[in-house]
Image 1 (cartoon, rainbow, N blue to C red):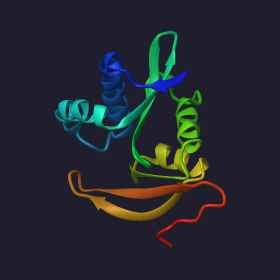
Image 2: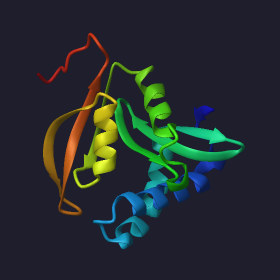
Image 3: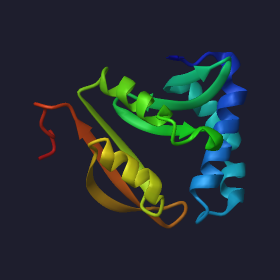
Image 4: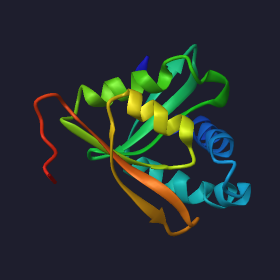
Length: 148
């Protein structure tokens, strides 16, 4: 079931956020993610967050700020089960366009978004970690990229 985040979900969501970041971003020092837990915990309620819940446990979540995907995270033990795709389909059904940023070295995520019809719009340097990231976008069929 996909549903909006509730305040009582925050601990589970943060555990998924940390575990998924540590797994997906081995090229960034683990201390970076640990150092940002409280900042993300405070920011999450400012976004529109949807969770996938099965048997009372959150399996993954996605945070949206307008049409920007601020994050899509699936618990490492639940990956490759279609949870991320379900969250993206949910967001696609409610938006004409979506954008996101992903580290270029996170090849698994880049390939996932490409499979889901996102396009690479540009490559830029992320200042905090000095890592290249890709700005990607998806547009509903019949919609055009307003920047082009």
